[in-house]
Image 1: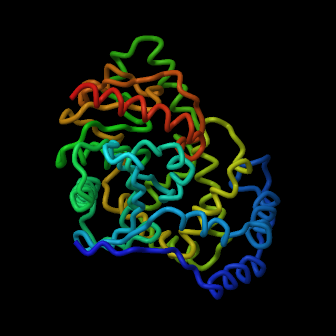
Image 2 (image 1 turned 180 degrees about the horizontal axis):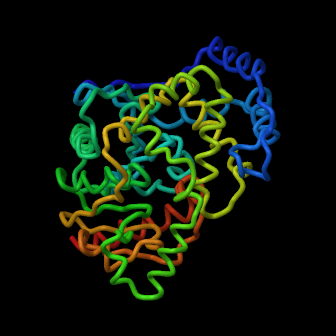
Image 3 (image 1 turned 45 degrees about the vertical axis):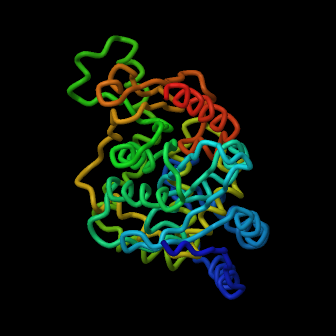
Length: 362
């Protein structure tokens, strides 16, 4: 069992090293093009790097993260870091939250405050943040088995498992191996394949065409990059904080389906980035890509009922082929790909509705 208390404690030397590297950046000349046409704009990145150096207060955010009870435990050869925030009500429903890439447990810092009616467990995926790096052979199913063992050690049964981005692949797998009440996915179920296209009606075809035109479908192909040569790029990300900042900014910009400027969530973004920087996990967090053979949308499951935060752009009748869909809203507030970070109050309210629904089904 051996569940050990954990506390984030980044050294003053590590903070000084980060600031020194930021101030010694060798900046490139801006390339022709408007805005983000050629990638992250130099002027914008200079301003953010300056703020990270002298304006952003890591110690304040570190202290806030340390307000959450944190632990580590070894499962399947990995030291897993996790938050465990019990509700004041002993009969509360446990909720297991799984973050995505390139995010971390920081994704849920604001969300947890709206989930006081639940026992909340937030593991850091293997190779992310304060969880140690996995060896070869890890996939979503193996993470799910580790999650099931973690919840067993904490004494939880009949819990709801949530997932977004990479977590959307893990959460359904947990239902295959553990006694869960339900599976709650941010989005991604019911996306048409090429084989489905001839059977789409006009409205579905229009929605699919619009989805395929979005930045998050046409930006830097991180799947191919991290599947092919993550070690190569990890040198730059681990050595240069501006290289890491530019990479993360590129992906968060592309994932911003709601159009909210990254500047409006800058501290949360930099806290997430700082966790990657201080733990040196830019490369180790890429295991889900280099262990894959190509991109595929999340798979459903029928062992437990499924709900989603955002049905669109998925198509419910397609999602129902693999999942018992009981919750499929189409009018929740839209926003960033990492909607739990962007709209925590709305996300928490919808998750609570799903939990109430699946509990009533028992």
